[in-house]
Length: 212
Image 1: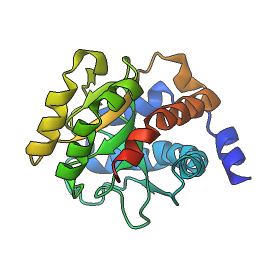
Image 2 (image 1 turned 60 degrees about the vertical axis):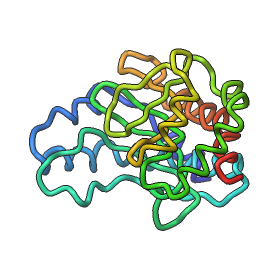
Image 3 (image 1 turned 45 degrees about the vertical axis):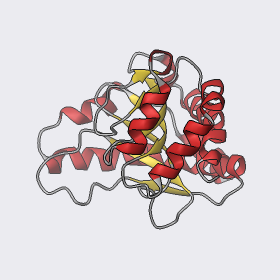
C-alpha cells in the first residue's frame, strides 16, 4: 500500500532540513527545498491525506507549496496542505505541516483568502465553549501565517482572537502545534506521522464546524 510505503520511507526531519532556510538566494534555497524537503512532504502526505479523508468523510487532496510566484526573495518557510479541493487550498479550511528555520508547524489553517470568514468566525464564537473544550492548553494559535511565532492557547483570550479573525480583513486563524529541532519526535518518522495524525484528529471537530 502506498500509505504504508510512504510511512516506511519517511525517516523524520534533521537539522539539515532546517538549515535549508539559511541558504542565501532564491535559486539555491529552492533547489534544496525541492530536493530535500518536498520528497519528505510527499511521503508524509501520502499517508495523512488518506487519514484526514477518513476522519472528515470528504475526499481530500495533497498540495505541496511550489513558491512559484517568487522571483527574488527566497521563502522563509515551506509546507504541505491537505484540503477538500483538488485545485487549491488557500481559499478553503485546510490542514498544514511545514517548516521554518527553527520549528515544524502542524496546523488547522484559515488564512485570509478563505471566503466566508465572518460566518466561520461567528460559528466559532457561538460555539466558543466547544472550542475551549476541544483545543488542548498546550496547543498554539497564530493569527498570521507569515510569522513563525505563536501563542499558547491557554494564554489567549479566545473571544478576542475570534472577533479579530472576523473583523480584520487580513486576520487569520491557525490552530495546532509546534515542534522544535531538538524534539526527538522529529527524527522518528513513524512517531512524527502519528503525532500529526493525532493533532488533525483533535482538531477535526473544529474543521467540521467550519461548514455549519
